[in-house]
Picture 1: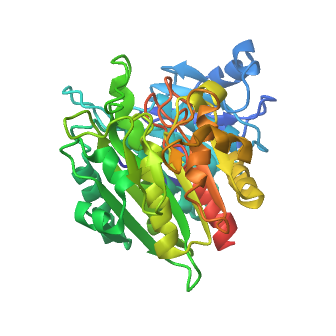
Picture 2: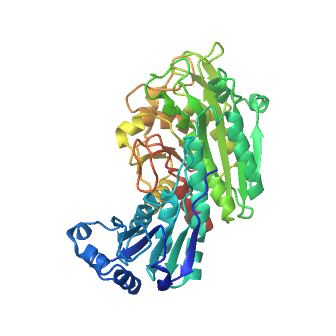
Picture 3: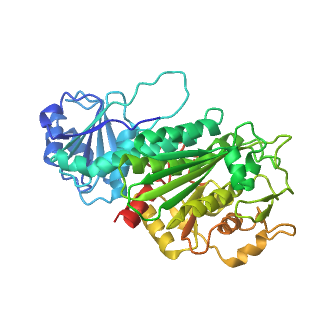
Length: 487
């Protein structure tokens, strides 16, 4: 997997500035006042830093933005990155400043002259998240060089940053999974990558098709019956919190989605490698929990299938029976993720009796129409859980917005022939998908459904990620678990 760049917190050493290669980054208050280290850097640059912060280009910067000075006189560095960062900067501003450093990071690495800045750890975290690369280009690229963050108290800042290391590993694991092409990330390969996390202390169990047949997961199995890749459910358990019931995370893991017999248009279908994004987030959270030895009991369950057209594939009009026992009329085979989740949600409750449950899925294009690529859609049966989730998302700078989920929408998914049908058509498409899932949630279980179709693989780069998978949700759910179950 892709690993975060090496970041070292070191005692401030102003004598090392002149000879440092790569780039030097320095936070400067928008007022233009220079820290002692920045003043030393300015002297080496023969007043170049002072002139830069007095220029209109710097004064117009918003907190977290940067000004790059290329090949500065008096230094061996290729560039000095001047970061507009107040001492009382918000967390998001500090992370944005770190990402600005990462965008220009090369093989010679960087020195960040943070000194006594109170947001040094957050700046380093933003740098780590943005310094990510994933591709299959045959031209070899030199790896990112190490980063030295010079601070007044390196041990204290390193302690603040320690949880971020595990979190960055989890985010990168999710990004890698979502970015992988479907001929590499088959259901077998996905399950193997999750099984390998046993070495971190997770308990991992793989349920194969005969197991799923025995459990009655005909909704999930119906989705994958047209594929050569076997359907699976992977169960990951982290038991760090004593005897209490676990918190359950459930993810949709459709490794490729053609739409099945209700086949999608060819244009854009190549992006359906990301339809396992919900399972990817669950996997990244579980990796983070294990790496940081979380003091909570969490179980992560992912349904892994591939939705392909074939002579054996499920047809529109088929009726299947779920593990719960409800019958489902399949109106559209491209509304397959909710069929997968229906069985896994029920299995999670039946086996683990969780204290609360959240599922994640790249479920509907309708949520992109509603919220674009800046917010995930949140649907819930529990105000307290949804409030805590949205608060965690806000704290981590990941956009999320609560959507309606009233009983009136249930009428749109009534079936003439079965207990329920798997789509209500175009009107309120993301809401009727959530209403379908709610049928497989027991009334006494606090639950949220998060539709991440718009945020898992946005069309452009984001502040903390290059173009491609973002890893959205790993930070939010880790924060939610910290605040709700470890506090």
